[in-house]
Length: 165
Image 1: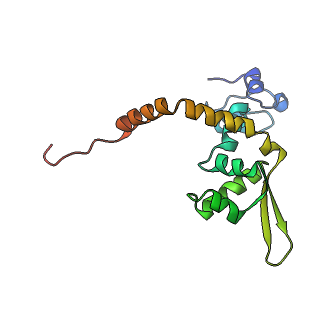
Image 2 (image 1 turned 60 degrees about the horizontal axis):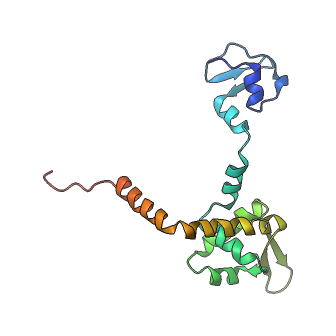
Image 3 (image 1 turned 90 degrees about the vertical axis):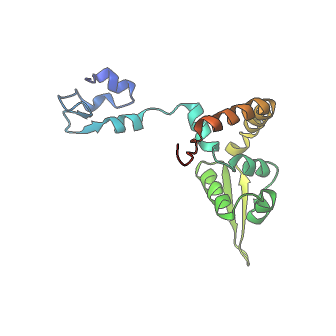
């Protein structure tokens, strides 16, 4: 499988790299002596907007945590009380991930004892209608999804083997 310059442009690689030389199929080599593997090409592919959005909000507790931050900033202890099933370690991890994605702002107050508050950013607040729509969809299709989960459990679970069979 040979890659032409137009193929590389489609994959988002700069067209100024020059023509492709004869390299192994899994590696592309350019006249600039730069080699590009298929993995590197795939990394440079643009991410679908829906895929990026799902990545940002995916996580067992992110939607619930963000939901509680929509109305007002909260301290870690308040969030822990509001979402008692989450461990403190997981709560902190989910908050950090949302902070990295710009959904949550973490503010440290310089006082004794130190106080930290988390709040939804403008970007985080823009997800409010999206999360409500997802919740409504989940509620509307709960019975169907439960049935499908039961079917999937039956298919995925390995059969236990009894002695002598």
